[in-house]
View 1: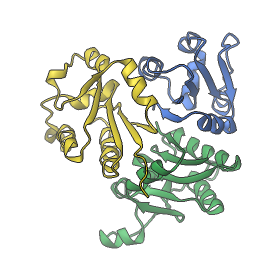
View 2: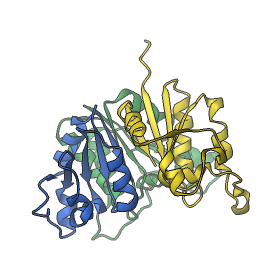
View 3: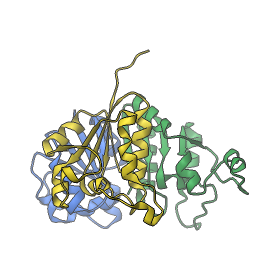
Length: 130
Length: 96
Length: 122
């Protein structure tokens, strides 16, 4: 089946961010197709490339990046949620004259239309959030 | 036509009761994250037999809990089972 | 290729200003509205507080959510429902809401969910 994953809670604030990762990993292992992973609201913190957990804690940003790379996942961070929370790619940083860009590699900034579009073309949507 | 209702926190006043009120025969509940604590409390034991209740094993064991012996209508699933449940219902609804 | 419209149901269950969730859900609804699908918006539980009249969010430098809800017909989102029980429990009544909404009982809500291709709650 084609699945869309919606994540709207932040890593380290809510287990839901981790649950979404584990679910996606398990769905891929079971042979399902991930249409898109959409990070929305506080969920966009999973795409902050500057996230630096202590070494003995699970690094969710890194884990997502590895999964995205391995399965060539379409991982989108909602651009309006991300900008508000200080997460941006080089293009947005330039546009808003910010000193740095920090979107983690593998993630793409785009609009909510990408969530709707994926929801309309997949078989199931699963939401994760607190 | 069935719905998988995913409960991820222990909110008997809102989450569970709202969910139970709008369930249809054939729908199922999946308890994940802090929702698994509902296993240890009254509301789950009081579920009607027609309600299929699943509990995510990883989240249950992480919290030092086990399925109550009396809960005949509760079943444990792992993440693979979670994926299967999502696919075997027409839609999922997270009562976050 | 012309596709059969799908039904997307959005369930608003959060208070309007205590978190960003209410606005986040409304943004989802407005985004979905431009896709020409069947959109249902249902206010349940604490979400019915979003419909209270006389909100003055300027007092806390917040955007007026109820005013944004008033714009829903412009986006052709006309299927706006409210959980009658939730209104009653909070001492709200249909005729004192900031927007027009169709009252729903449990059976009606169950049917709305069952008719939906996807459901989003926030």
